[in-house]
View (cartoon, rainbow, N blue to C red):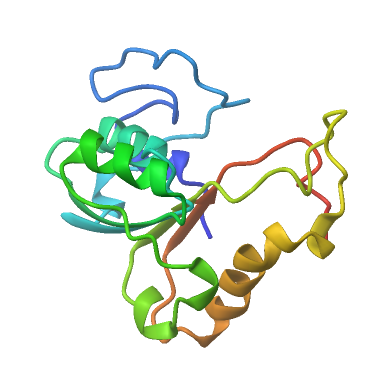
Length: 169
């Protein structure tokens, strides 16, 4: 996987929009060096996992260089998130269980973007930090086990990070 922020072409960092303005509310801790937009295909196929209400999609659409189009396939098991996602983008977010996605479902995407459950890793007071033993990690563990089985794995994988995730099992 390659740093997604670096792949966004003309944007100086992942928290900067196409027109150069800084996107407010970014949790980004640093900016990557930009890569030429020619690195991206003209049509980016995006798999949005643990999609929620579409935060990754919104950010990616804002960061893509001019002339690069994207199509999205989104998954999130939450009924309320799926309803909001549909309202936000005019298309549905599949409520299929991510743990049940097959090689066929995961094959052929240029990038996977995801916000897996953070509670197993978070260092907040309320978190139990059970790491991979937490049942909420099953879907992420499933995805990790599927990548080597893909004939054409994604060129990039980007995921939301929380303090405690780096260095976990």
